[in-house]
Image (cartoon, rainbow, N blue to C red; front, side, top):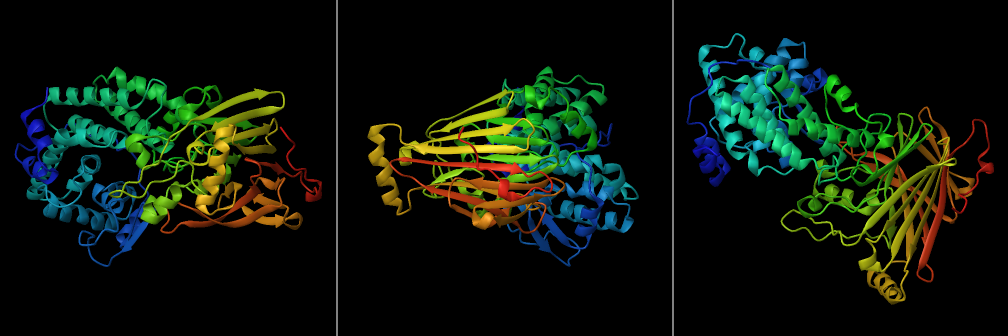
Length: 569
């Protein structure tokens, strides 16, 4: 049953709720201090103390003693600053001056905004901030006068009430789990009512069971979102158990369902596949990484969250084999259907551009298009198209179907995919056939587009005429930044030198193969990384087009002249 505060708080604007949450008793002590959700980086702490503020790829510099007067470049950067996860980095530093400088930011924040005013009052951001305050509270309060200690506990009491009242309005994914996990953490740590702690544990378990489906999948289909959810659930589960309480069986079951799916979406390097706005990984403590790696082997998970994973030898390929997410998640989904990533050993070779949301709205929009993925385009257009922005939210259309099937035999792994996302716009289907040889040293691909019904053939011609674009099929392979690429065989092939992975060669049955500039979005850097992409194009004739291609590792010392273009499959 909701309390009066929850009912009133949910009906009021956030800032009013935050001010209202300041009315009430403050906890007087910490009764327990669980471990923080992540370990910090002392190098980041040193960087911050010098006034270099990098959050999600956006960089600002300041010579001021604190950053609270800076104009944030965007909401994501602001949330990173006000969430105060950088306290983990400060705590990891062995430099007392660095710790003093960064905790000075905290005390200034409390003086300015600790009564529920100013920015940073999204429920998940407030929960993130509260978690760090509690995790490092003993050190924060060391040698502080009683007045500051009282101020600190009053601010924590406000945060607990605010998050308790407003967590239901968070996005239906990692944000909600983060808000609830932080609330559980606070209830376990601060002096308070036992029934409130039990209620928070029940709420967390119920939301975990709802957000993580029976098959271990989530609605956003973002591997990073799933990793963040599992990491927070695992951390909070351990905290509940260590406190002597019993966690929700729903929470435990949700973790068990998601772990094998998450393991299947990791490359051998440990990096996550970058689909639908996801990054390669999340910041986890070593014990959490070990926890996430447990469960069934990835090969035993069938189509994890709609993706297909095939591994042979040291080569691993992960392809998006399902329709993009829709509804609220369609506003951040990427046009990555039938696109893949490929790694050899611990080195990425073929990648997607990743999410550009940290580098501005144009980069965010561009990174969602088909051209930013290692997939196929028709007429240089994105399948499903992107609607014009409406209030800052751009919806990806998902009319059509995407199907995929994976099988193994004595020759290796076979992956067949079919996408109808082009059908409404062009009247054409896309079929992708991939074969990874048993030793993992050769990937053969065949991409075909066709109008398989007579009534759609007129639509094909009209669609290209309307676009004023050539009728052609385009295959793109974006390369990892550490791969060195060059044209070979008089422009009929592309050679790729992979760190510790030898030399690979791309070839296709078309004369139109080029090596072009590309972008790799890395949110740990202030600017996108420059890289390259392979582009192979072929004309669509008689409402049918096809490109057969191969990516093969050359034996050491062999000549590229012996390279064979992919056999017909």
